[in-house]
Each structure stands twice: as C-alpha cells, then as structure tokens.
Image (cartoon, rainbow over all chains, first blue to last red; front, side):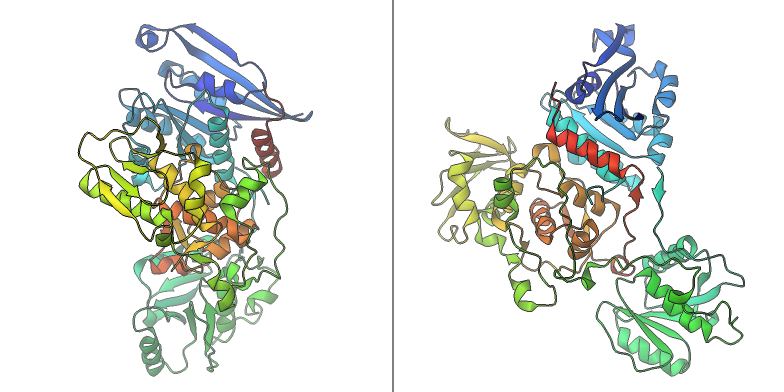
Length: 178
Length: 398
C-alpha cells in the first residue's frame, strides 16, 4: 500500500473541513474542540487538532487529506503534517477582515514546504464579500514573480475543490496526461 | 519533488571555460545565456566582452543585425561566430555557424564545441563535436516548429473529462492539426472575433467600462445587456437559444449599442452571467479550435494569471496548458507538441483566454532566444493521472 497526502490549510473558518469533506471517500474525521476566546466569535466549534479525509485509488494507493488547525498556536503541527506531502491547498476567506494578510501569513508559514512542492489558493465566501477581486490577489503576489493558481471556490462544491486539486497536480507536472 | 532529469548536461570542464561574447543582445538575453551556461553547461562556457572572447554569438534579429554581422566580419575576418535568428539562413562561411531560434540548447552546445575544437591549443580529447561526445546527454528536440502533423503521434490518452464529446465538439471543434509550413492550411486556423458576437461583446464591454454604464447589444438575437455595476451580462434567452448567434459570423452586421441611464435594472425574464465567463464562452463558441486573426503561431505565449477555472467552461487540456505557460512562455505549436495534444485544444484555450486578456504574445527578445526545456516528469506522474481520473470520474461518490 502506497500512501500520499495533500495538505489543506488556511485561517479559522475558511472551509477546510468542508473542502476535505467534498472530495473525501470517507466521512471526514473532525477533531474539533471548544474554540478559544480568539476564534469563538468566528466559529463555535473550530478545528484545534486536524481534519482527515481519504481518497482510495484502488487497493494499493491512498491519498490522505489533512487539514491543519487554523489557529496559529498550533503551528508546531503544520510542519509535522506537511512532511512528505504532495502539495498545499491554501484556503482564504474573502469575508475575513484582511484576506491578503491571511494569504501572506500562510504562504510564509509554509514557504519551505511550498519551495519543495507547489501551492494553489482557493478563495472562499466571495458571494458574501465581492471585494477584493481575484485580480487583487494576483497583484499581491506579483512582486515574488509566482503565478500561483487562485480560484474562487465554494468549499461545499466537489467540482470546485476537485479543480483546485487538479491545478495543484498540473502545477507540479503539466505533462501528467501524457 | 523528485523528478527525472532529462535535460542536456555537460561534464565539468577540464580546463578554463571557453569565453563567449553575445553581440546584438540586450541585458535579459545575456542573463539568459549566463544562466544557461552556469546551470546546464557546468560552467564550461562563460560570457565575456567581445575583445576578450574566443567565440561570438550574434543575434541577427536585433536592430541592425545584418549590419552588425558585416561590421563584425570587417573587424574579425576569421573569428569563430555563431549566428542566431528566428528565420533560417544559409551561411557560406567556414567560420560561421547558424542556429535557429528559439535555440535548442544541444544545438548551441554543438556549435560552440565545433568552434572550440578549432581554437588554437584546443585539447583534441575535449574537442569532439557535442553530438558525438558521450559525456553530453542530448535530449530530443522539443520544438513544435520542426514537427509536422503527419510526423507526430498525438496522445490518445484521455483523462476523464469534465466535458462530454458533443460539448467538446461545440467548444473545441474537430479540426485536424495543420502543417505550419503550408500557407493554405495556415489560413484555416484563423477567425475574426469582430465578425462574431464575441467581438461585439468585447466592444460593448470596453464602452461600458469607459462610460461606466450598462450597454445593450441590439441585434437579431434575444435582448443582451452588459452591466458593469453587477459585473454581469443579462440575457433574456437560454444558452441553447443564444448559441446559434454566437457561432455564426456576420450576425453582427446590423447592430446597435445602446447605453442605459443610471439605475438600469435587468428585465425579470433575463438571466445574469458573470461577464468574464460569458465572454470566455462566446470566444470558445466562435473560435471552435481556431485562433484570432493575426496570432503568430511561432511566437511564445505568456499567461498573465491563471483563469478562474472554477467559474469557466474548462476545455480538455486547458489546465495543462495554463500550467505550462505559467512556468515559461511557449509558442502555440510547441505547447501542442510538448503536451502531445492536438493543436485545436491549444488554439481554443488561447482564444478564450485572449478574449478576457489573460494571455498574449511575448514581445521581449529574450523570450525567443532559447528553447524552453522539456517538461520535468514527476516521479508521481502515474499517481497524479489516477487521481485526476478519480476526481473527474467520481466513481466513488459519497
């Protein structure tokens, strides 16, 4: 049995748990606990350990889907979770007060992992907040010269999350269909 | 990420690096050569000024390139020279070699090594032509410019598609690959967006943005209105009713763009489509695997940013093409060649992305200097392919 993993990360309440659930074969394992004061206003039961989902490819291969805890005080887990990962799916909520700051924070926090693999960004809750636009996210990343895929996503929609994963795979190997 | 290296790689130099000068090249081109020499040639060559060089490379496509060549030969009648140009040149000069751009790395190395073997005091052992040198691992040429449709076997593998066969025919067409050297075939790959509803919509959008008002496109089709305020196009018809007007040319001969006063609201029977997604789809319908007139098929294409694929019609191979162009500009033909896909998929994606201003032809000289490297094959390619099939096929829905 060969095991691989894809990491989902992002701030509290962006939809990591939901996104994993949209493509997982199994009901996601959710290890929610009571939120701290800092996050309770955003989401009553937030993920302080991690989420887990699974895609089984036949009998011999499994893709484990790990969602990192959104709270910064659990950042010691982020490095452990990313070890051996295929790549990072970063979710950012357009409805949070400063989504650019969130994006930069997580890109920086995972920079070593990203340097070894690839990252794609899904912007959630654009229906709740139209601004900033996707174009603005790209402008934020212009200075570093990276052309990271950034898509508008609804974490509940399988097609949206599937396309994010597809973009991650193609970013690693554009010739993968050959 | 582990990957199989398939690039040209030279052995460590056994003596001082060969000194080369670049003539008629801007700073970006020089930097590209520097990076090439240090990263893929094991510092066997070094870029220097003309006066201290042993071999010169001259870009004939630079401003006054032919004159620079003449002046160079006046200065140095016997000096080893490598001429590079997009256009093929026959050179009748034993001290001048020609390499066509974009330069395949192995051909540049072969030309340098050929000249180097004739330099005074050159080591005979080290001076074999590059192609015969067992220490040089040559990759196959990657350029689509050299390939003809009859000589290329296009991949028949298909990842599970988000698009049915009939949808694919609607959006990408069925045109076979063309031979780029055949002018007649070349004519068939172009269409003029201005003759379709696509072009009219783009014109209306420009006007709507400029005057910040809603614009109606009045013609033989059901009522269509572009509204900047809501960032939507409002259409009082279904896609099926609208499509015939988008796929036929010259339906826009008698049309009128009508601006609306502030406070316009869409009619109750109209459906709103996001502006970019609508124009993207109009471009696919109109192009059907063709290119906007004037597109140069040998010019490298850049992508400004990834399309927002989750809100667009995703044509087959679109994601692969976007990923490839995000890494490095490549020509349309080279893209089809390295991805081993029919040209129409590349043309369709380009037309749609061009309609919403996400892609374009590169203008910098450096982008046509060196041929892009082969795609680095991930060690997990097989796994990725299976995951892709799974995500698209959804065999095990929850």
